[in-house]
Figure 1: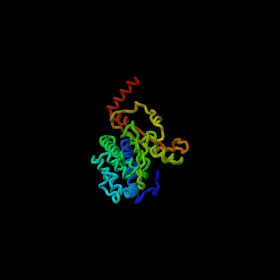
Figure 2 (figure 1 turned 90 degrees about the vertical axis):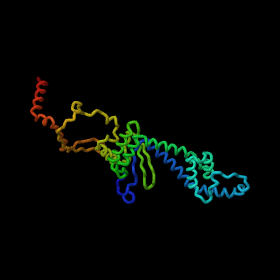
Figure 3 (figure 1 turned 90 degrees about the horizontal axis):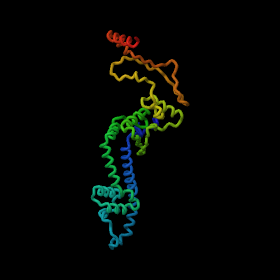
Figure 4 (figure 1 turned 135 degrees about the horizontal axis):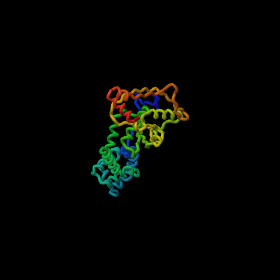
Length: 312
């Protein structure tokens, strides 16, 4: 994860933004990418195909005048020599999606304009229908709505954000999607206008950018000190029973009188990850609830009777 000031874009802005999400948004992004790539490719091919079509029309002008070759009915209203191919393409796509143009007529017009590259857009209606269906699912799915609300509510998480921000964001999304679904991380890079997608299984670490042994150690320590489960440690080991007696875990709602002090310091070895407690440091915890309760004479008398019943 880049942290140097040089990683910032122009004006000190971040160069990317992360979006942790579920499979519904992943499918939407992939469908949108497919549609965008096809449109963009035909926009790039437009001038080349238009030049070829102009030369072909000049060679066929005599046969057209003699009526030996039929003109395309859809394209006869367009000036294919001067009008931008991409604008004609957008107009025909709009007519096709609105139901004003038959599929066969649309396919024929695309083949006339783009030749063998027309295959890229012949199924545009299927892709648009899939996108519309996916959007309806995003709107109606409560989890997807909550994920989008979380994305807009939280501060932007990007390449300059801390490990804590990334892990906390991911954990919140994992809590929303449930245990039966994986989380996807989608990053948008502003400068190159590129989108990257990463599948994060439950056992995968959030940021897989540590290369050296010191960087991996720093990543582990940064994850260890958080309240969330430590990344890189198998979940089976984390789910082992904790050394607490069940009889000490009360579910009542009484007011406890406690005091604590956190001065314990630890050291984790870089090579072995062995944890050692530093001499002269300690944590203290005291529960004054019973002592405060016994200050009441009635409570003290009840306590004495209970003690005699247990020892008598």
